[in-house]
Image (cartoon, rainbow, N blue to C red; front, side, top):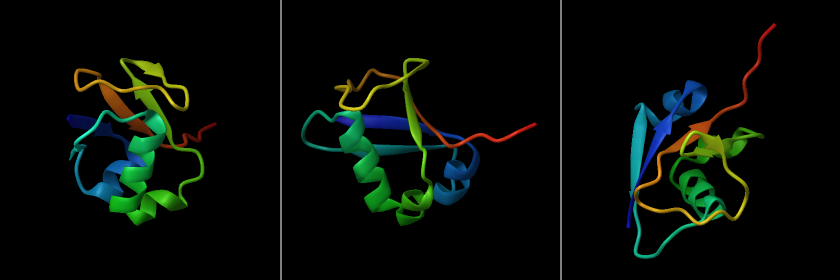
Length: 80
């Protein structure tokens, strides 16, 4: 299965691109995907509150992902 993940903010800087693709043998959950991304890009592990959005909505932990899903990695946002 092939998953494409859009990246924003610091995650884009860490990966060096506005998106990344993961190819795996089996279907993933949101937890699996985050674990794989953190393993491939260890600096992502230092970010405390990464969120995943799936199909333009924040995703819950353990959500099963489809190759057709629009997935985005959302870093913490600060502002005033």
